[in-house]
Image 1 (cartoon, helix red, strand yellow):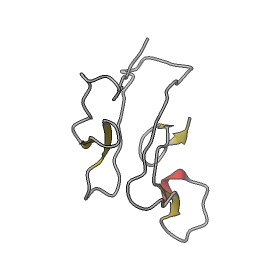
Image 2 (spheres, rainbow, N blue to C red):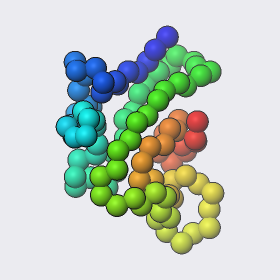
Image 3 (cartoon, helix red, strand yellow):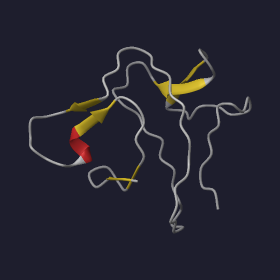
Image 4 (tube, helix red, strand yellow):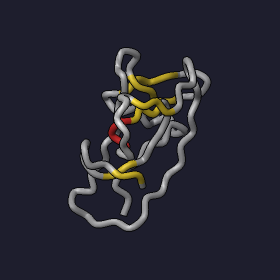
Length: 99
């Protein structure tokens, strides 16, 4: 059972409301220019799952920051790092885990 779908190669698809449409070099979605970060939350409505499948194609706009530690605390939590790109996690903010 598929719970989420976003395919910007499909001309009928639009970006989620909190993201902006970017036309070049190909139809794409990106965070709004003044937003420090943005997420796409896909709920499973309580359905259990064992597999997460997907494909991402990214284009760089601006500087390649990659990973950036938000504070100086020594921690292994994904909550304290900023990622300039795509990550796939599950859980709620404060208790997320990488897929």
